[in-house]
Image 1 (cartoon, one colour):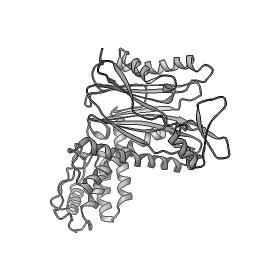
Image 2 (cartoon, helix red, strand yellow):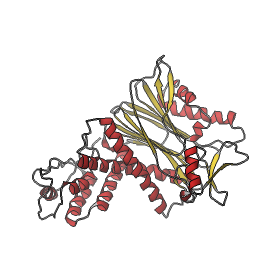
Image 3 (cartoon, helix red, strand yellow):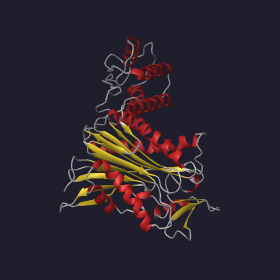
Image 4 (cartoon, rainbow, N blue to C red):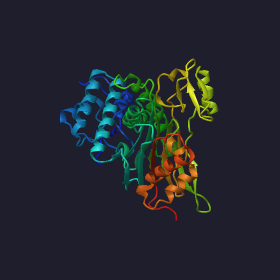
Length: 431
């Protein structure tokens, strides 16, 4: 896949740039921030720009003779490159570079869709570059429209060894729209924040990403996820065409970068790793917390914000969030995007971000919405996936087992939407 990015070479040793016709640059931090907002991936990625000699000359003149740009074929990214040069001359800083970075990330997403690098429907993805295989499936429940959705993006951010997977579970009258909106905006926003965090880390700390590689990479991803979730939630609130006051969505996603897996969870979906034990059997390792209002730390935050947490008489054990004086909305999760009616009363969109270094013992990760986990245990899920002969049908079989379990374990209760992504790390499963 052809990639887009920018590579900056060496600035003046003094850390300053000369003044010329393009404008005054106050130190390398400013230009690296601006250029870095387009630089997706310091390690392997270059921006391939198809630009005129005039633009190249202007930017190189601004940066200095010892700073190089690798400028190659670009297509629709040339306007962003030209905009970057104009932003330097006009003195525009953070806001403009953020806009450029987001535009570049959105353009990458569109390009990835055209090249079938993004999967948003039931199916499978065989990514030879990252040595991963993903199986996906979703099934509508008995409550109306399917409010679950998911996304698998191979070569995430044009990095051959990176993959993004996410499941999103909407709720409320507009929940299916909110879930799809979060699915659309979260990956691109994450890319934008990740590239900026890479740039800033390089500038402020002279960070060597090859030294203590996983630790440094995780810190950058964690920072990027926290900023991304805050930005996505703000964007939802500002959208006039989407009523997210009484509707919302959870979001569980992972980024696999080489052997590092970063997990970010907002809500009550769950990620479970299947790993090989000493005796050769597969055992589950739960990678996320189901953020329910009944969890002590979650209930404490909600009550401190004047929200209420209690179970209805006909739902013993199912804790929900309620407004101080009205028995609404009754959310069964303590973290979500949207749902602004209770955002001042303890509901948050802050993600829990964790990491896992994949070893030869780890076989696959299951990401699934709560409709699956309400009736399927972690051990059962691992056994179902591992025993599926065709890996491409693993997610479908897991969801179908969950739907049948609803009939046995939850008689009289409407079946919830069920969705799953099974991400395999190795070419074969243990016998």
